[in-house]
Image (cartoon, rainbow, N blue to C red; front, side, top):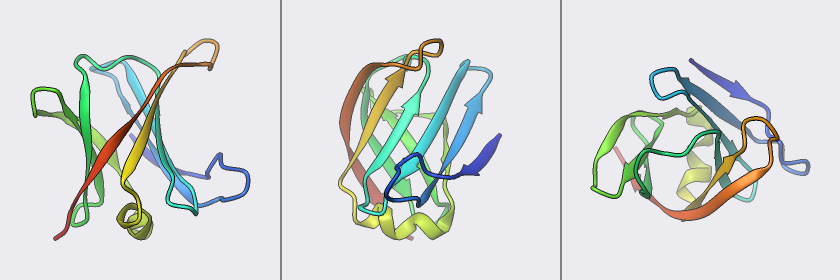
Length: 117
């Protein structure tokens, strides 16, 4: 299930998207600021280490590439109107939040690779 959400950035209400994957018991929330800062919050650890993030301009989808170079069957569909912000970003901040306390447990900046159609 994917929904477009208002941004949590107080000075730059651009937007975002969220996805919940029951088979992985994980929720992903992506937020974009007007400065092309992109963050993905997740509530559970990934099964393997993430290596980089890919954004496909044709499908307007963000995918997560794992340490073995594999793209798992999950990602976040993004509103195509946010495409320009992805073109101006070079990294995405990935932040794991504790699902109960909502406090940050881990964070890392990963390179963003753009696939242009």
